[in-house]
Length: 268
Picture: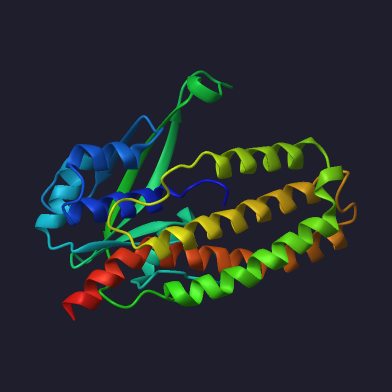
């Protein structure tokens, strides 16, 4: 959970575009981020994959009024609303975007291109978003921003206590690297949401990402000699982390979806 999900970027900047707050080119650039290229395949009216700019315009023409995020995992269909075929594909990817008003959903598939065994700038990531029909129904288990913020305060306390118990400062290099990456990310002052989102959504997403980073650090510490050394201890740690991770994912979805929820409240 240390990295921003691609579905989050697509929903956030797609919503800003639908609201007329950014240009199509800026939205496409922000969504792609460090990836080489994004394409969308399966859009009604398009016989071949198209770029993000054209895809977002096509979704608006098809009736899309907002983009929502789903971050499902086995046993927790967070943000999904069916049908089963779409849910299964989203669960495999562990993320998806639902275009409200258009009855369509987008699921990312990533491909790496570059020299064998390459890494960093030598590897280029290409993303294809598969477009599938979805139901127009309330998404599963998505909390309000207020509920998410309250839950996160407790989750942050639990994650911090667990890190203290693990003594991450005395753990091995993997956990130390994760901790350094988290600190650098926290200090970067990056823009976590697109224009048009309420300040509370920004606050909730930042806190959810902080909790997610702490979970990553705890998990990586557990795989090193400085952490748990028995399978039973590792299993106990995973069990302790599960509800905290669930809370952080629910909060992420609430933050990304808040722009759509707010617009729908105003229309209602």
